[in-house]
Image 1 (cartoon, helix red, strand yellow):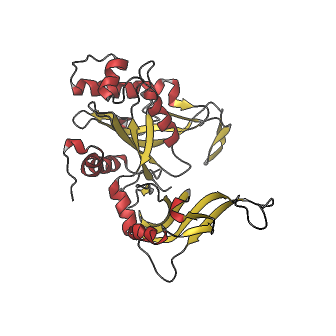
Image 2 (cartoon, one colour; image 1 turned 90 degrees about the vertical axis):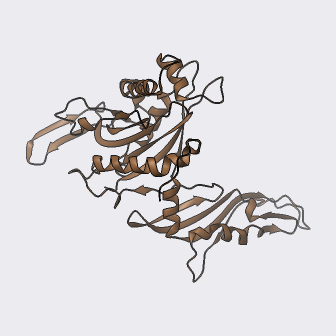
Image 3 (spheres, one colour; image 1 turned 30 degrees about the vertical axis):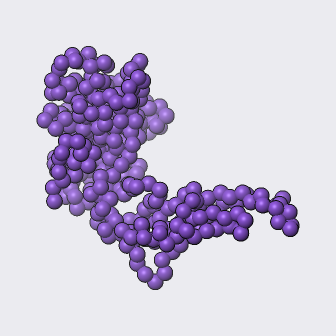
Length: 341
């Protein structure tokens, strides 16, 4: 188990307006009065979030996953940590249950061969996952943080599906849009200790230029991939801008059909560095200003539960700290919030 965090922005989308707020959604879709306070609006959003876990869109037959809150305290070890709201920060945070269904399974007691039970394909095999949401009444964009235990043990896709449908309401609102991002502090942390392993350029080219041999009937369309690998030297990832300046005017092709590397369809760098206590390699599309390194919880949350999941009290505190000190100043500069050093 290698717990990690993922970050997504939530963008509201309305049929007739370019800018709509979570307040607008609550008024038009949840029956909140137009003069209601922000606290009243937010409490209604929290109620909508919790109650909708019983709606059809809390599960997906395509993804074969479901999210919910197990109501039996004897089964749900973290029932008291289910998602609660903070009306001062407009955040919702807590532990959800979720997992896969759709496969016939059997459960067997390791200490008793006679103690076994069949699980039908309609049964969800659930784990515990922590979520943290920011839903500001005065803005059209919020975000959420979601914890997963590994690439396989996660509810990220079904939670995205849930959030997108949570803020859909006919006829006024389309599905919300969720966009993965990574707070700048973690981007900087990864870049600081990373080196460039290679820079690659890829594109498709069609060569229909007639030469003395005519147009080739054998092969005139190519997929071109060019790689540049630093030799005998470590180049810091922070120097990627300078590296790209070296290659931007380099060209590929013939005298009559050339293309600058800067104009190739895909420009990507492979970075390697120590992040979250381990050496990681990741690819970054250089055409994007931001990149999304995986944020592992090792050394960030030190306590764990018996099942290997992170201690949810410590994880909540970590998320609250990075929300207040790093994320909020980044995504809401209009609030005049400053980052802490």
